[in-house]
Length: 341
Image (cartoon, rainbow, N blue to C red; front, side):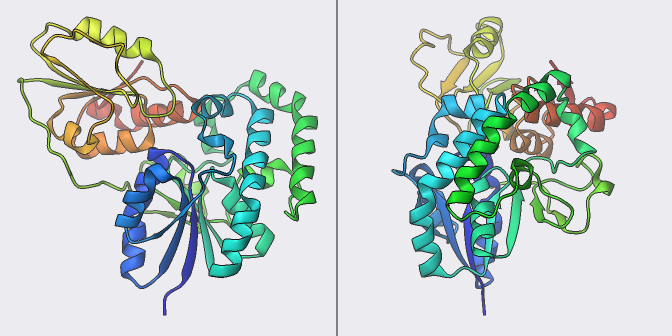
């Protein structure tokens, strides 16, 4: 007899896509997956066999991309956003938990409301980590300095106020670190290999390193030149100057250049024939024909590039992406696989 599992994720491709393969396998094994997510992911979640439960329309502030950009830079703001989003979903989730009666909750490592729900209703919990697992040892790759630590300390009174809002709604939370940090007793799925994980020997056997989730190619792309350059900086943090500079350098060359913007590309007009600009592409298809990948260093992007043996030009935009870039450079330097910019 299978289990009933409630799965929570944030509205981000890089955090949703890796889970779909394991969701499909769990459904095939007889488990019922109730996946709390957002309308833009409904089709692919249902295709994996899960029951889609919409989190749209609840004043869920983490859908705002400007908010998403600020989260990694301002801990007090991030905490307020976390609490407000959790409380916005509180009534809906309470009704669904009562109806579904899940045996287990799995949530993305930054979909903290999933962990909070598990705490509130005393349901067994598993963390789904789509980047590296972080603890006191591997966190050195994030390179948080004295300035960031001081900013966190200064913001603590505001954080404590937000924690009280959760307690008032029945969430048994002692402090912010209890929410955002897993320990060696937390059952955790990590979508990378133990070999690639920094400081892997410091994690307990509660951490299951299942390797990257590599999807099949759905929409093949044609290789139109001897050398193909693929450029993508992900779907969350945007820096148009990077795209513009790359296009300026590579236009009117003999290279085929595929640019995935993850947004409307009206500002990039009158481009030469060798530059192909898209809102989005099948990344597996692009990498299958690419000779080099200019990337923001999301974990999925790096893993997929290495799967296709595509050399990386790494341009991280956040501390998390910086950690992936640092580890890729460190681990693969002998293979000349990555240059960090």
